[in-house]
Length: 240
Image (cartoon, rainbow, N blue to C red; front, top):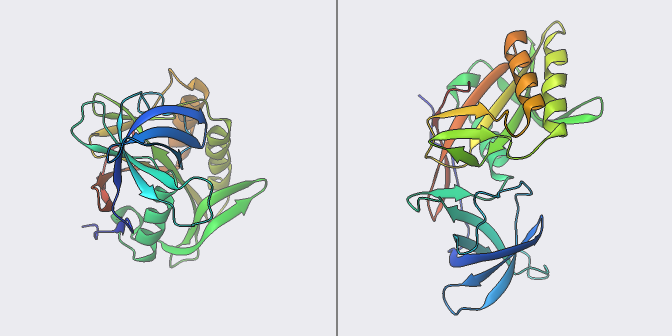
């Protein structure tokens, strides 16, 4: 069984309603408390087209740095159905998985120990390097999933040349003696039962992922459980 691993928010979240997205990293929304329109940092540069719809209920976190231009950070959104939450922070999966690996809290990596985060191969930087008792090495890349349709998590939500390159390089890494490659898709929402590549969005990524499976790259999936207090790592879900 996996041990529970979570990350807590450091301050109460404030309800707001999405208005517009001037650029990839900034949104404008209206606070529920006083109706004031504010700018908030968006820590997920993904497309998020299906999530950031005018009027969508969001939760903002006060900025940690008092000198920052935007006084708020977007943390959560309600799902389109309004019955659960989606994390809007693309850095959280890495933080969560790093914590889980450090505590050996995931059964899919029970034979591996964390060596260090951020391992560079050529021109690419991967999220984690692990090793086993025999000295074999595992290069792990974590991918955040926010898009879902009919309880299916989909990746990517926009064309990702970088993601495709990562998959291709993990195939090459796995061909070396004593080395393995792995991809972990982390759905930042709980309302999914499976994760799939999205060929209608990025067919080249989907083809490369299929090649990776055939080549022996480990491919795993996890969901998250999200509350207004924080995010915790949920159970495993299949990736197909």
